[in-house]
Picture (cartoon, one colour):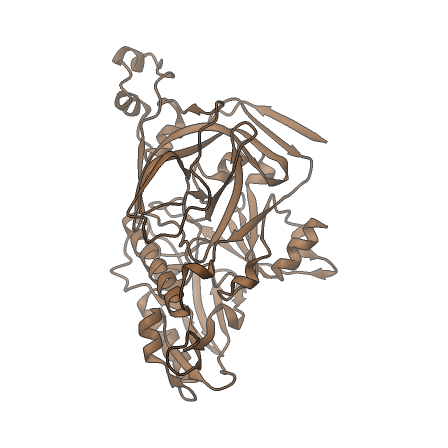
Length: 478
């Protein structure tokens, strides 16, 4: 049985309706975008994803979020408009706060080297309406510019601006810049329908007809009025204020990502601890507010353990200052974890001290992948356990080996001698001066594999628990 909830939402929208089953939670599939045909060798794959992770991280310090890499990240599918509507697939991104998609007619400049679009450009349905210039949604898309300025840009007459009578004038196009691309989009409202029959009326999204090097849209899940969770929570706080995902471990093997990674909206705090006959303990750490980048999910990092040695994190990773510097961003859209130089060097030195004594350094692989240190080994490489220590009493997350040490066959493409090689999957994000004004570190999605990561927006905390993500999907489906 379905229920309709209708309420007046003056903060962002008016006359919103949510149609959804009476279930306390909603389970949605995340699909991995990895494609064997897009990358010719492991070196190419690693080089592309490491470069994209670095670009996304460094451009954040210019207050410019970067969407996901098309080679190794996660997509969410839904429909927009009255049925029959085609399915749209967008990258899920907890590091941005806007939902936008390509709209027909669509032109992507300099997209020849990009992965093909995940779905055809959207033809707006007859039910789509433009967002007016005098609305908080329009102001949010334009970095909180006053409605009077936006309506003037929309050519609303002065007397109408003074009398707040500009509802017939649409919100001006907004510009959104990324690390290696950009777009111009207009805001529209229409019904959004997710799998499991959830339908959100008057959902606000950006419709882009022209982009630069960005062929695929983004479903922003970060803090912000226009993010998908924020719009959902406006009419159903139970579903929008708490969500989690559990990324299936893949190690860049496309055969391992055929099963979906579960995205759970309305994750119940009590029921999350029960997993079949197993009681699962979550490790929680508080979110930190970032005044310059308010859409980020930032947490404090106390240190990193390599084996039994605990390496303290610099002070700026434990908090965020009023300039927006510091903290670690938990991000679904960056592939590899990025650390500041001083902490990265300490971790690498300790790791190399333990592994480099027994294995030959693979310098040539490091040059072609952008990762390091890398090592050749014969049968099994013995590597130390790496753990993350977050701010909070006992907030320790032990990473599985596959989450930080990637092993593959060098020369498996038929060129050169075949040798086993393994690389540390952490990256150098730069020194503290370079990182000023932005996050000090990023926890990438590769290191989040095999964990259920819970975002509690109401209590402002993030939790981690080891899971068999494919089994978690089955437990909810059954």
